[in-house]
Length: 429
Ligand code: GLC
Image 1: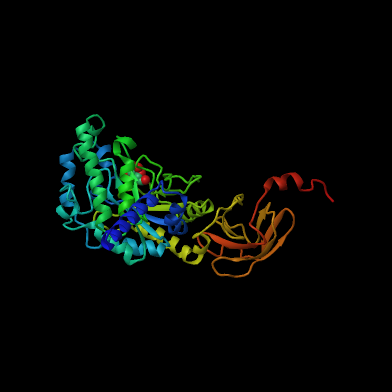
Image 2 (image 1 turned 120 degrees about the vertical axis):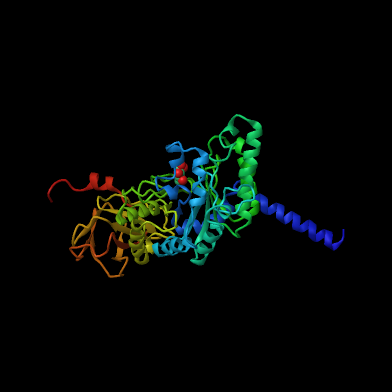
């Protein structure tokens, strides 16, 4: 064997080993390493943007209103976003304390924001006249954001998108198309951090050839993480519009009003307080929060979303240390606060401020010191077997929309409300 042959063989062996260990079946150690940044990040921005943004009546408008393909297609010529709109998204995400972004590269409507050799129904060949995924990737990276691609498997535009379920030749063509586009997305934009599949209708894992799909993904992007919506488990679960902890890694995705895509009349906005509370609820159980914006067709972000995220960002700038890298937290019981934890520090996030004294029942460990998380100001306290009271606080909540106490404990904080119920002396001394 010549030295050249030997080196080639070694390179091939190493590449094969990489493919194997990088696959989602490649073991927990590999997964843990790939997901480290994501677990620490806690907070990301979801972006739903497409031809539906031109109509402004929700991203399901094509199906909900029964719009024929030929009629809907005309929107592709009308879609003319301003240059580099994604820079505003990325700046806002950074300001909000979000650490990663996930943009719809193709939603159910089938229109592709990226340059695809497999279809003309894509941004460079239609109204935009340029590659919008490229702009997005550059904008996100420019602000130090991790980059995610949402990609819908379900496709209302592709001629084989429905009949693939009953016609093998159609399935073959359609699955080649989908795999081919994923190949393009993960080959043409440098390092991608998250692949966020969506809606696997009308096929199952066998029909989609999902194992092969993921193997290709990990071969192209060995450090990527993938979600569970291509009919496989993937790296993380995706509870939608609700916050439910999972045994495994999870990310709750949520709209800021009631629509993912731009819907001009949807005014059901969550308050900044609700967003912060949701973020804390995720952090409490070590989940992530992927919060959506639905830009208009020109790429501008609805003012309400900007206002909400700006306010959340102010809070994150002062309190982010209570969210990023949070660890599983046990204390949970209060009618006016929620909790997160890092090491022996319990963060008590008070959303309904009770006044100059803030009390917590059932904490079974010793408090050593307390302060306001945002300002670092010391907080006085007294503690007995059943409760701890933080005293001398302002009558009005010092921080908006949530005031957080950082409570340093002697060991990992633990709350036991049953202890209070059973053991509290019931007779006067
Ligand atoms: C659902 C909806 C879709 C949205 C997605 C986000 O699957 O069909 O419109 O993109 O949720 O999680």
